[in-house]
Structures are given as structure tokens and as C-alpha cells.
Length: 128
Image (cartoon, rainbow, N blue to C red; front, side, top):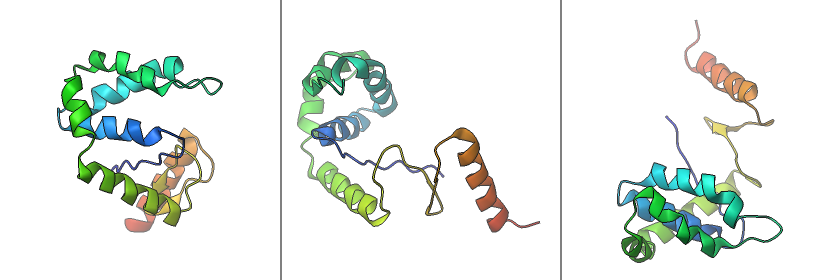
């Protein structure tokens, strides 16, 4: 089972989480995430971040923008963000992305390392 958690460490990152969660209400989470990643160079430059520019790209996901702006204020979304931040602190997450398999952190980022961690957990759970 894959579980995605948010770790909005950067200023304003919680706004992007709110957009994604509001997009779920329209059944457009993955489309919105795709648009965010593809347009990231235009709004998230480390030397000159302009997060407000994301709004010009969001229609590409097929979103009702006015509904997104309303749904972003849902208290359930704020609660989800607060819980994910608390969980990140508990797990000592300091950067993103971070991967955990059965609560064990991936120490070195990479496909092979992640695969090894998953396979080792499978062997523990289902020994021969």
C-alpha cells in the first residue's frame, strides 16, 4: 500500500497542498500534481520563487478554479496538513522526498535502494 504524506517545509508550500487536496474533491488530484510538476520551473525557481504563478497553469488540469479557491479553506484540509507535519516531526523527516517502508526510512535515495528496502521488508513479513 502506498501512502503519500505532505511535508510543506518551504514558505507557502501549504498552499500547494491545499490546492492538491481541493483538486481531489473534483477528482483531479493526479492531473493537478502533473501540471504542478511540469510547470514548476516557471513558479518555483529557488532564486526567484513566484508561487502565485501556479494559478495560470492550473486550468490545464481541467479544474474549476473558483471551486478550488473555495475548497482550499476546508478545515479538514488544514487538519490533514497539521497531522502530516506532526508525523514528519515524529519520523524526523527533514527533506523531501522521503520514503519509508513499514516505518523504516530509506537512508540513501535511489531506485535500487528503495527496491532493496521493500524486498527486505517482504522477506521479513513472508519468510520462505
